[in-house]
Amino acid sequence: MPVKNFHYGNHYHSSECTRLANPQNNETGVRVNTNLKWEYAPGATDYRISIGTSPGIYDIVENELTGNTIFYGLDENLELNQEYFVLIIPLNENGSASGCLEESFTTGVPTVSCQEFDYPIISIPDKVALCENEPFGILKSNNPARGYRWIFIEADGSETIISEAPELKYEKVGQYRLELYNTINEFGGTIECPVSKNFQVVNSIVPIIEDVIITRGNSGLTITVRVEELGEFEYALDSPDKNFQDSPVFTNVKPGERKVFVKDRLGCGITERLIEKELSLQDFPSFFTPNGDGYNDYWQYRNPNNSSEISVEVIHIFDRYGNFIAQIDPKSVGWNGIFNGRLMPASDYWFRAISFNKKEIKGHFTLKR
Image (cartoon, rainbow, N blue to C red):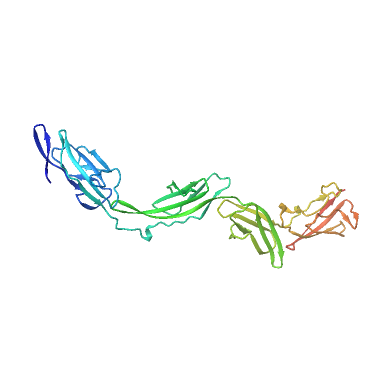
């Protein structure tokens, strides 16, 4: 390398320009996190360094003094597969060396690529609920990965990263995307192996059962469940631990005490209703007063919970001596205290109710006048 001079007053003090020691000039495959090192220049008390991505253009570091050291560490990693140009000028209190040459090196070119086993597994539903009356929801990725990016997609298509944690706290409906990635390191650089999936956050509600319609056939009951509002619901019979089905209709159901369960498919809640219960004496009033005042004028089976299903098939009424007085349809208004066109006297009367299960229950009640 040519000898350069420092000028000291009326005489010259000879000194060589320094040169790169690590990486060396024209070296290739350099790590992106490398620290620069150069040879000591005799008489130098400081060095001025410039680094750029084009010859003579120092867009990374320009004329930065390093002090009396022969090392320089960059604040950020360099780019992979990029040539860099370096100019280092020694100096002291009398001036700086002149005519020093620019040197260069090139970072490594990645030779590896993501293999199938390098990609994380992603599993997240297509739809996620923001439940009614809940201010926010929590969604967690149960798949391990090196990094996470939860992204909200605006209506105009612009995207915003809203979390880089394994879970997301979300407060509004809309379109989202989850990105998971693992990494491969080479030449000190990082290569991402990403996977992603879009999903939608939608409003959802706890189901409310509006009605249960029951019809009877030769092979058993047909039960149809109606809910108040549209939603993505699933239905089960007798137990919430049984398999839920998409259809609100159950067929060939044996008579007896039954419960239906309606579950929000997106996880916002579950509702149940008893649709046929075993008969008990509490299902029949202990008295009635057929005096025409509009209160307790009829004696009739009490339909529990106003269920659309009536458990009683027929009711027979007898006087205290066992004489048959009336047969009541459980769906009618009931018995008005009249037999063969005449008012029956105030007294105790007996009834026998037969359920659709062919079970029988007996009791008595009082007619008051």
